[in-house]
Every structure is written in structure tokens, then in C-alpha cells.
Length: 364
Image (tube, rainbow, N blue to C red; front, side, top):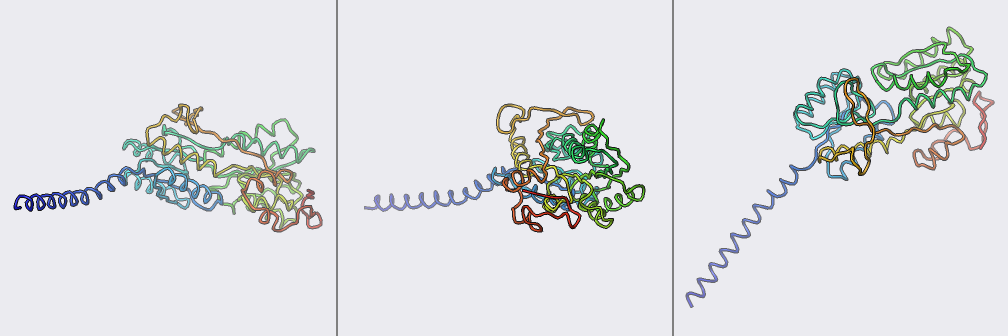
């Protein structure tokens, strides 16, 4: 009888100890899982341009679905602030850093610091030169410029003077856009009568540039703008000079306001770039790099190209842009779900003409 009671007592003690051990080990297991979670630092130039908010939301949601946490920082156009953010990411031992550079050349040094710590670095939409980064993902910026030039040539068959209002001189993509644009209008009857850059992509500078150009000549057929934000200010300047709708304006990004101007007749074209696609692919490749996958090997979003960053050949994932005009805006923008029909046509009914207010004629 005593042996039986002793056996029950020992069994109870062993079960109690086993339960305590299981309880103490469980939090350790969860902590280990948390430690393995991928950490990505994402630094934006600013959120002044409409599209960056879309990029942020899609990148974060995609990364989270793949088991990564994203720390989003915005530098508000201040290079020193962006450098400080990268140093913060290094201090926090991020697994990867994704950068929308304000001034690529200014970031090369701090990017190398990150690489020395084994952190993967991705250039998102804008190149960082001489840094040998792990990936550059962007749209074909030379083609963006070509599409703008081709549309101006088509919209101005008789040729004439045009203004070229470029983006920020510190954004290396601008050089590629200018190159594509210049090549597209070469041999045409178009003449660049005035050109200027908009430092830090400040849209107000486009307004000033157009007025400076008009002071030289108001005999213009078209204006090329670095993006839709600049185009908005260019159209404003044209409107104040009673030229809105009489001058073909081309730009890029397919912002809602630009799409509205296209159907209203005050902007000729915008270049659509599927930023959700770019952000989703970038997040997927960032996670793949951290996990040690060879992104140049066959697999999801295989990187098959390289591009020179000035010193090194780096992996390059290129996405094709699409020209959007009044003729295909419903198909590309509305049917594609980028903007809602009621928003695009907010100020005009389909088929309506605004010629009496100076806008271009639009028929569906």
C-alpha cells in the first residue's frame, strides 16, 4: 500500500516538473521565432509626389505577407535626414535597406557602411552610383522619355517651339528620361526653345519656368514635364496666359489630377507606371535576398539584366511604362483599377467637349 502511494506521489511530481519545463520553454520558442523575422528599412525621399504613398502601402503589405516587418522613414527631401535614417537602420541591424534616394551620389558612402555590416541594399526607382548595391528596380526611364517625345511629335505634326521642364538634377533617372526624350524628337520639327530643371522636384519651379519661357516666346506647341506634379503647375501657368488646352503637355506618373486634365483636355499624355507592381516585386526580391536566394536564377521575378551604376554592373529589374492619352485612359487607368471612373471624370462627362473653355476636344 505504501509503495502504491509512493508511486502516485512520484508520478505527480514528474508531471508537475514536465509542465513547468514546457511552460518555461514555450516563450523561448516564440522569442526565437521573433528574432528570425526579417527586418527591412524603407527610406523615402518624401511623400510630396502622390505615387509614393501607393508604393509604401503595397511594399509594406507584400513584405508583411512574406513574414517581414518594415520600418518606414521619410526624409522630406533633406539629404542629411536620409543619411541619418540609413545610419539608424544600420544601428538597428536591419536585414535589408530599400532606398528611394534624394541624391544618389550623396548616399554612396553610407550605403557602403551598411554593406560592410552585411545588410542587403536595394535601389528603388532611383540609382545610387558606384555603390555595387544588391538590386536596382525601376521602370525603363529612357523609354519614359521616349514615350513623351513620341507623343509630342504626334500631337504637334507641324512642329514648333516646345519647353522642356525637367525634374531634379540630383535624380539620376532624369538623365535617362532626358536622353530618351531628346532621341525621340531628334529629326522632328520640334524646337526646344526653353528648358530648366526643378530641384528636389519642387512643382512651383515648373510654374516659374513656364512663365520664363513665355517671356521669351508665347508661340509654343508643347511642354514636356518631368512628372505630373510639375505638369499641374505648367498647366496653371498656361491657364493664366489663356493657353491651357492649346499647348500639348506631356508628363509621367498617371496621378489622378493628371488623368483628370487629360479627359478635360489640358494635358495631352501621361506615362503610366504600375507602382503597385514595382513595390510588390521589390518587396518580394528584398525578402528573397535576405533569405539567400539567387535572384538571377529561375524563379519568381527572376532578374535577367544588369546595369552599370558607374563602376559596377548590378542586377537590374526593369518594368515597361505605358503611354496614356484620352484614347486609352479608360482601358489602362480605369479598367485596370488604378483610378475610379467617377474620379477621373469628376469634372467632365464622357463625350463632353470643353473647347468653349479652351480645353482640347474629347469624344468617346
